Length: 240
Image (cartoon, rainbow, N blue to C red; front, side, top):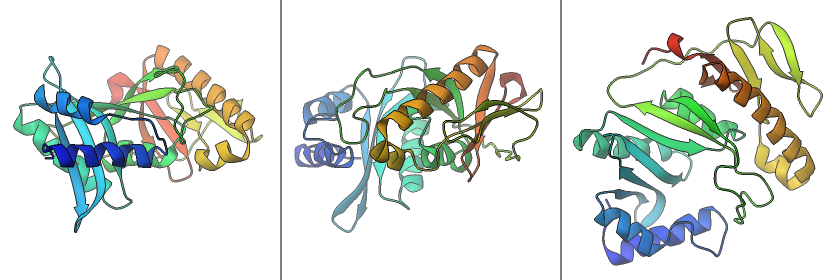
C-alpha cells in the first residue's frame, strides 16, 4: 500500500497521465483523505516504475468500493487481487466499481477474468467529463459487483435467437432467445471516438437502450465474448 506523501503524489500524477488530463483525476489531498478514512491506494511496480494503481474505500455495509484503477497491460489482474486481499482482510465480502459499458476489454476483464457481474446501468454517471479519454462522450457506467467469498465460472455462449435491434454499423446489436439477451459493443470504442464522435454517440445511445430495458426486467450482465457481445441473464439465475 502507498501512504507516504511522495508516493501518493506520484499516484495522483499517474492517474492524470492515464486519463490524459492536466486536471486532477484524484488529487493528492483526496487520496490522503481516503487513506485517513480507512481506504487504501495500492501500487504495482516494475522495478522503480509505477505501472498500476488502484484506490478503494471500505463502505458502511461491509463492502469495498473501488474508486479507480489503472494498470499497464499484464498487471491489472495482480493489482486487483492485491486489492481483494486488502478487502478480505478487513472483512469485506464483496467489491463494487463502475466502468464504461462500451469498453469491451474492460468488460471482459471484469466479467470473465475476475468473475464479477454487472448489476446496474447508470446514465451519464459523472456528468460531463473533460479528460482526454472521455471528453465529448456521456459518462454512462455499469456497476460491477465482485463476490470475494468464492469464484464464478462465466458461461460464454454464442449469440442466438431473434435480432431485436440493429447497431449503428448496420450489424445486429441485440439478440434474444426468449431467456437470455446478448448485446454487442464496438471492439474498440476509443478508436470509434477518435474517428467519429457522432458514431460513438449513436453506439452509446443504442447500447444504453438495450441495457436500461433489460435491467428494468431483472437482468444482469454475466459475460463478455472476445467478439464484443455481452450476455445478460435473469438475476435469479446467477449463482456466485
